[in-house]
Length: 324
Picture 1 (tube, one colour):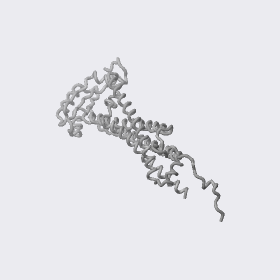
Picture 2 (cartoon, one colour):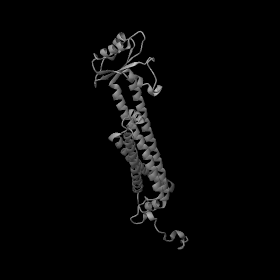
Picture 3 (cartoon, one colour):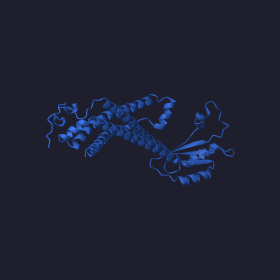
Picture 4 (cartoon, helix red, strand yellow):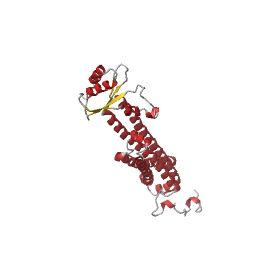
């Protein structure tokens, strides 16, 4: 058997320096890199979008609650004009009947001028509506928690005033509930999609970092480091990136929501602002909305750490299988 040549490359001492990330007091996975800053920017943008979606869902839920509360405690009686009847007498009769119903706190007939004003957004101003058969309205305010017998009252009202129609707004409540539920589910779906996009971005970034640290990982394996130690190093790095990006995106979302609230309060005297407040209330998401925004940022950081750990463990198993 021939002896190996002492000059054989396999027996020569490897004098190559250690990778920079394996030197003393150096992190295994560098943090302040171009790829790391790019990933943090992506996480910040995704967190911003997810936080805005969560805030919009909370805003829609609060506005829907206000709408339903206002509509549920109110009913209207509509008196249609009839040339064979005295509409003022019919209004007086309907008001008198409504005031005898248990659970009705107040009854207020709407004057003709206010009824005509309700048509101005569609017909414009300056029109003489005297000849038009504009229905007259009577607004009924219900006591909180009251349950009047609407079926009996509606039947009695039709007998006494055939041109009267009682509207308890149940149809509107169902439509408002459906619309609010759709907005909330859409916001939740957007949040989930954005979180999934963040998870994919972290997974690809982790695989790129593993590819760049392949030599370091092999050296660590040679000196006895197990997969759990290596995975923890990568996980801590991506958790920090996720926390930074989530904090930036969440803070930006909170700032935008707060600025919109301030602007809506300053424009409260404008007609457009009144319409927006009628739809969205005071444009405030409350503490629940801000907690939802912070929670989204925390979840993004948790997803970054979890996905990086899973990706690293999977990649290490692939390396072990390839080496075997």
